[in-house]
Structures are given as C-alpha cells and as structure tokens.
Image 1: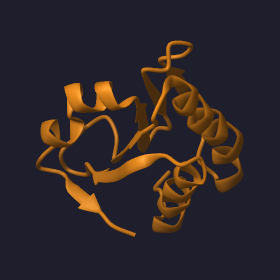
Image 2 (image 1 turned 90 degrees about the vertical axis):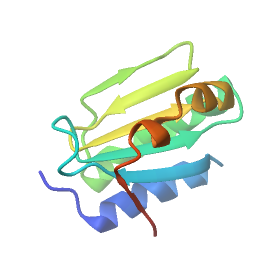
Image 3 (image 1 turned 30 degrees about the vertical axis):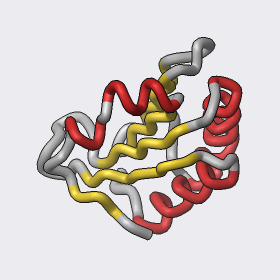
Image 4 (image 1 turned 180 degrees about the vertical axis):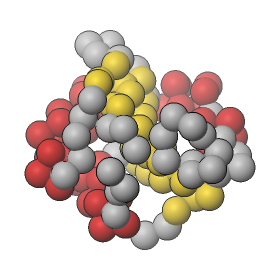
Length: 113
C-alpha cells in the first residue's frame, strides 16, 4: 500500500501531540529495499518515548497505517515501529546522537510539511 502525503503528515502530527522533538521524515524510495520512509523522533526520556509509541499504537490504525511489529520495549531507549512502507524510530537523546540515522541515510530526501 502506497502511503499518501496526508497520512505521513498525520504521523508527524501524532508525534508532535506527545511533544516528540527533532522529528525528521526521510524519503527512502529508491535507496532502501526495506521501506519507503523513516520517521525519526526524540523523546526526552524513556517515559516520553513510551508515551509517543503508545499514542502511535492507538492512532495509526485509524489513519490506515498498520503496525506490523514493535521492537525496543520495555527499555524504550530506541523503539522501532515497523509499519511496512513506514518505519518509525523513537529514541532518547543519547541513542539519537549515537546512532545518527540521518547521517547514515544521508542520501535520503528530508521531507517537510
């Protein structure tokens, strides 16, 4: 299923509702064979990371985005949500700085809304 721009914007907005910071959406089409988009966000603490993930688990189905798998709980330092064409990464600041996914996927277009 091809995700629509409207759905991607809604996911960004859902993360913002729980005060996720430094939200970046990368277009990986033509770069990755695994997924089309990465959404990367920072939560200030493991509690906030969990709150963002819980909110997404509750709401993504209502906008037509299935969640296939969630990895990284209960530690919640880095939670990965596999939604098929979209993979969501919600990380604590230390994990975000250390793994620097934006640099790793530097060829990807950063999408703006």
